[in-house]
Image (cartoon, one colour):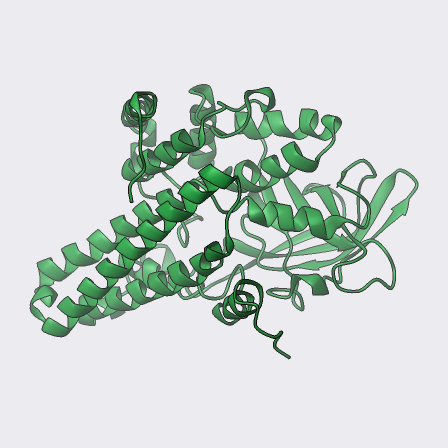
Length: 393
């Protein structure tokens, strides 16, 4: 199965490709291929400037409706844009969380005032967002959120802790899931709040990972205040909003992610050819296996995207996606280290902990099977929600 593109989509592809080639040059030429997962600590200010350059060309929020400041691109055009961005080795998007998660949530469930206040700065690349979901006791089990919020006059007062908050140290705002009804349990009594990151009582503490970088953070709220109007959806109905936000993670950008995987896979093959590892029959078989699995990933994704285009929603088959790509990416990282051999253990002194691209791939991909629901949680979801098996105890 391949995407069926007509003349309009092909013209759109040429426009996107030409713009990226022209603009990923000069001051932005060093950003190619940088700032992705495991590398998000580099070129932060430069990637924010790149967001503004994208905005000047109308290339932020391409799938948003024009009434919300987007380009109003069709689903196929969005797929084309993400493919071309990956092919051009565009840098990791500093505005990713605002554009793909918060913005669509407000477009669907926010008030007119919220859309007027928060959507234009995301489109312009002027404000950046982080996600306040996970807690020490509420990771894969998000319904166990303990951060509390209560109304005090015209303000929500928030107290609690979030963890694994990506890019919190560079964000202007955070959307926070907090328990706003005392004594409530699980999915009930939660509210979805928009909180300025410069508010009093917020303490951001970077978490140093095995990559040596600190794009993840702990965020502490100590009677932090935000206006009462900064609640999305109904008070106490935050679970519905939170799940809607997670639903926006899937979609056209998936193929772009896979093109990034392909680029990493090609780097592993290039390293194997350069150092002779490609002559090892066991490594050759592992390379072939990963190539086959990558092709399967693409074909399954095309089927799912075609279904979304046809029906307007994803079927239960989509539940395998995260488990599949996370496991594949972890296995690619392990292959990369075996291809490098002894070189995999050499770390330069640059910045105190210098890693090459394949070392970063290996170390960061260890987290793929943990964040956004561990592999074990993903298997339970597939068993219970897709296959209808009894709930595990």
